[in-house]
Image: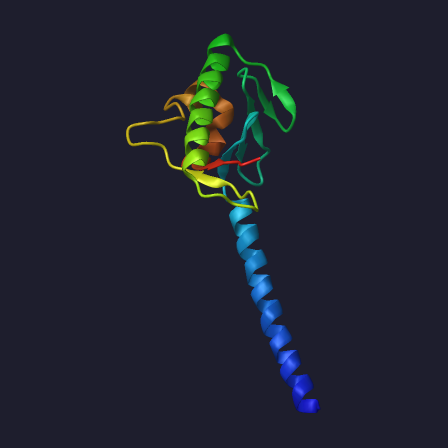
Length: 141
């Protein structure tokens, strides 16, 4: 009986260690700098910095506080939003079905750059978020 109990305890430890590793991998993936494109907004995330939210009309929010923009800045964000939406739709059409609705990595076609090269110069609030530009995610929700 003691041997069976020790065997079950050892197996439980192995299972729990595996779950712990899976959880750690999940947390690491969630904390990576990225741009998430959903149907109604684009979210730029880089912990511990606040999230930047871009809306379809070109408005920008940092931690839910709207940032006043000039007309040219707003137009740049509108165009960027549109490009990212097209890439999201194309990515989701080609992606296999997922019942868990996990995000899908967006790979822009060669020669296509959905993030304007002069974004940081035109809108300085993005200067600390440049590492997110290479990690685009299409949200399935």
